[in-house]
Amino acid sequence: MLDANLRDQLKGYLERIVQPIEIVASLDGGEKSRELQELLQEIVVLSDKITLVERTDDDERKPSFVIKRPDAHAGIQFAAIPMGHEFTSLVLALLQTGGHPLKLEESVIEQIRNLDGDYTFETYMSLSCHNCPEVVQAFNVMALLNPRIKAITIDGGLFQDEVKDREIMAVPTTFMNGQPFESGRVSIEQILAKLDTGGNKRKQEELSAKEPYDVLIVGGGPAGAAAAIYAARKGIRTGVVAERFGGQVLDTLAIENFVSVQATEGPKFAVALEQHVREYDVDIMNVQQAAELVPGKLIEIKLKDGGSLKGKTVILSTGARWKTINVPGEAEYRNHGVAYCPHCDGPLFKGKRVAVIGGGNSGVEAAIDLAGIVGHVTLLEFAPELRADAVLQKKLHSLPNVTVITSAQTSEITGDGKRVNGLLYKDRNTEETKTVELEGVFIQIGLVPNTEWLKGTVALSRHGEIEVDAHGRTSIPGVFAAGDVTTVPYKQIVIAVGEGAKASLSAFDYLIRSSVDEEIVAVKNGEAVTA
Image (spheres, one colour):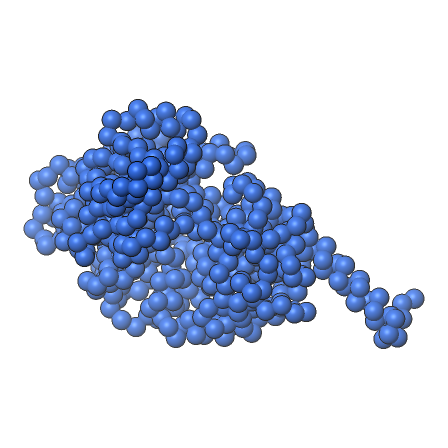
């Protein structure tokens, strides 16, 4: 299954294993079991520290396999043939089980080890999901550190009966001890915050006790990362507080227009952003949501969970999120047929009928991708014509299992109480209401800025974006903004990076001028005399 190049790369990685490990495979006579057996046998010959045990008489899912140390608990399990995006999860599980150091803060490691409870986490994923590996890898690490935790990764495309029985219509979806636990991308810090509420309270107290920053950046996407790097390089005290470092980039699949990087994927780009920031003396405070901005000589950012941070200057780079259509059924059936990531959730709709709402580049690209997986795609666009690039439209119209409907206003997403079974739309030319029977709806109509928490403080545009001038200054002295959250046109990664750098330079200039002004005032008041 592994080509020569991948095999050589994997052999190099496996040389880092320092402790013996076992792979225990549960197989039957099926084709998928033979595929998994072939993959595992290829892996075993690449390292003398790995042994393979094959079983057919156990009660485990088949095909599946466990990675463990000899005589240790079976904490990490894959009910999958982990190629695609999950190949990295497989490699990391092998290396970490084999003694390769974990890239986690010691406080996080201790929090995992001290969790009091017995947990079995089952994470359903698809091999084409770029959001799933972070979740899979988080639970794998937890299982490795705590013998009372078991992590099972399940390929929804391989175990479709389970997906149907558990009514899973979005990935990643995780069950804890048989009950729904989380749906969507989550970090290890977010998981711990949900499991260890006492630890979260201690965290908020630690945050509130921190000294004020020269520059406090709210948001960890491309704009926030650039701002942090530029501030830290000036030698000033810099902090970044973010819900998730990487921001919306984490939900982006292909990036092919960032200058000097011919092609990459969003999650990889996000990792590179964080690694670059961590090269400098920057205090990164992840999994924290800003709730209120309080202007003053020291600007305060109050956090949702109770803590607060202060900065002499603040840079707002909270980005944007997928826009919703706000029709009946959308919220009720989210993750039960209503989805926003075709790359992640598309495989769950194999052979089924789906709709894509939105005729811009995102919508048309989604329809093209889905057409190769699902039975039929209906694309609905509110305007009289599609807004996507001509080359994308040409490709879309060449596909035999795609129907394009323009001048269509979606009015309701319908379901049977458990999952989506159709949608209603109004033909804007005839005013007639029509029905489309389907099993899934992918919404791709653009972005909305994350500024609800700022209403009544900084000036916002009618679209909710933070109004900024050419220097990234907002309506509040000492508060700057950058990226997709602002009125700057064209929401692109490369533009956000530039705007983040500019806002950081502006904040530094503000700090210098403010300190000079204070010295002048002090001299005038006779409080100090310079030679």
